[in-house]
Image (tube, rainbow, N blue to C red; front, side):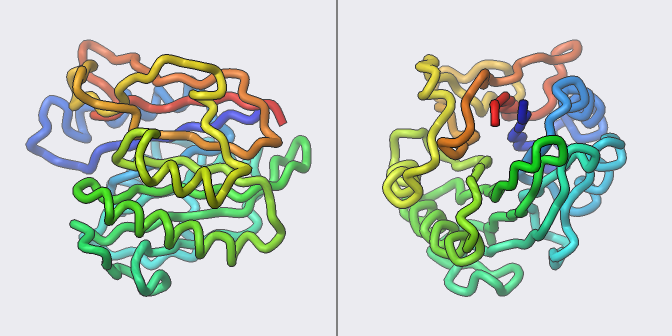
Length: 256
């Protein structure tokens, strides 16, 4: 079984109290400890917050060996259970016209955006895979479309071994819009486990309220056709009305 999660952890905003980082960091960490994923991707968070988060997860390691940290920037990150996953290679791609210039921004993006990737191997089975985690622009659909195109173009150059791909992230749009169309057309080996199981669409961004009737499923796990989906769901647990984040975490279980 390969267990994967995606989590927009919400940046450390003191104005969120009582849902600020200090008030929910352990709720978030405990949710992931309970699920115990082999690998998971996070979105949002600056370096101090992410390093603090890593300290709460003794079984998981933040992969940032080839990263250029910029103090004011928020980063998508990949965490692996180092007892279950070997990391072969890793890196970042900035979703701009200059994808290897740290902090670069194009396409009228509100902020510099990037994706992060690893080539990994499941220690128990020897299964090798290419994992990408991303956070797209939250304002313009055309910006997101251009950003996902950069991701597709650049990851194809990196994944020359054609390893089975897994993609997680906050895509900031529903699965029925242009970003998903581009992924489906250009990375046809990827599928949406949620749709594969015929699950009813839900809202993943809930604004710390636990409900959002006007939202959509903007947080996804996509996997290669070589992986069979056993289960996928939004983790909606909370502790005394304190949620892990303003997004529900996405948990998936797959058979290799």
